[in-house]
Image (cartoon, rainbow, N blue to C red):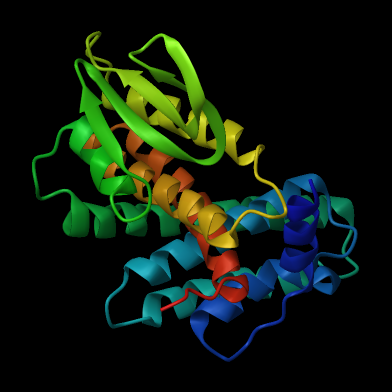
Length: 255
């Protein structure tokens, strides 16, 4: 789809708008001269570190000294990749992964402090994730939430086709799915639905879709404190939060 082609070009060409940490963190990957002909292994490591840096900055309230320290560390390793052999590049990629792991551990602590003090249910986490953009409602034992794109058939009296309505997805709560199962179903529904976006669709819907995924992954992590899933979900939060950040440059919210 053209909208994703635009997004890919946009991500690779954007330049830092200012000297702030957000722009610096984004720039360590989007400057193609820095990674040169580096292996996929290195590019993935840099991307994940960049995503974690942005997520960490978003969660910090005042002091950005930690992220600036990590940024200098990662940026220095990327700079050493220039004209280096594949072996050296891969070794540096492993070092960047080690830094990223430290950043993720810091993010875990920030999320626990900011989000995990309240007792929530998975259903509450879903409602909190979509409340500002797309409605959700409870029908019997199902949580139904509207998807950003597409339409589906509408039925009068439950059986008679009667026009169309925005596409929705239902999660069956009767089977008592665990929080990670609910997250995965929500995530899969959103990612599949994003494929249905058209050039004529409002870009704010893509922005909000990534934001909803970022928030739900963060809230779901609270159910897995101290477990491997906690780290997995925080990595997903960092990834989707970075997508939100990219669209901050492209989307102007109408007042």
